[in-house]
Length: 378
Image (cartoon, rainbow, N blue to C red; front, side, top):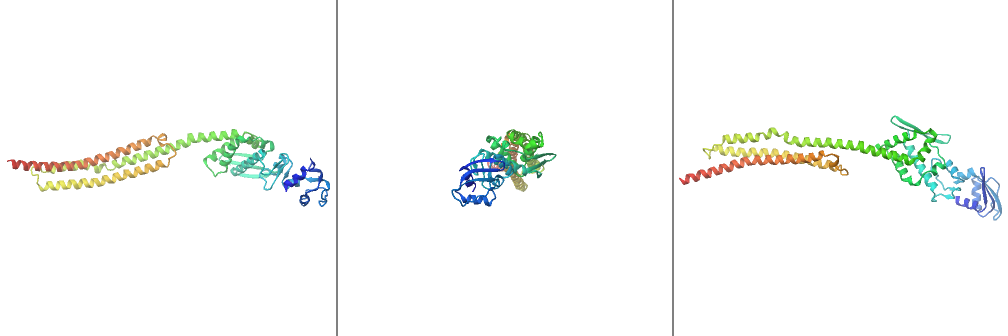
């Protein structure tokens, strides 16, 4: 219906005077629209819409035209829709703009409304006084009072090149509480408090690019000087923890491993080299292999512990797949090195463990062979 009203207005000479739109010498062609205006009490003069083709003068009440979506200027449009987008079809005569038309002003206005909605989201309290919405924004020991006062000039001051920055701030303010949101709100409070109450919102709009840069720089500083160090400390602590676990695999088994050389000394002391076929030698050799087997079982347990620790390290590193751990914490290089050293130590212990009984066994066999060879020779 708005388009039909505008069509009527454009068919005749019209002007605005006070609170009335005068449409002079209108030739009645859309009596249905005239009846609609009557039903909405928009017409201020008495008209018989049935007299088709009759030339008449129309006097339309602007306040009631506003209520059905016709606005004579951007100023009136903002007054009637200051904090919410209109839910009905509308027309702004000053811009010759209908709902859905590509209008820079409407785009600017829509972004202001979105910003207001995000500011309401971060506010602690809100109330309306003399048609002005007021917000109280509080964070920790900081606060600011923000009356949402603006006009069409403030809206038109928005440079469309900063829309992306505006949307970024709106998105952050619309989120649940995050470190980034808290940081941005603190910067907002500081940014607004340098101005008087009634100037704060216009100051934010007209200097929004500066506010965005402040927030962006503050967040980058936070990431580089706080999150980085926090992550590095966590990684260093974890690296130290893994290093201690790896070292404890060998350290905790020292008392058991010390029995290896002791057992070998006792075996060699008990071995009867004068009577190679002595039963004691058979018992000693069997005992030595049984001892080596028991120690091998223990070493296998230690090896399993190292493998388990290694799997935990790999899993932990995968949780930081988007970060370069080697640059953040060189301690993990030490962890990998220590793991490799401990594995090599276990291998060395196993070699020593089995070399001694096999060498003694081979020595015993060689001595027996040599002994019987000597007997045959004589």
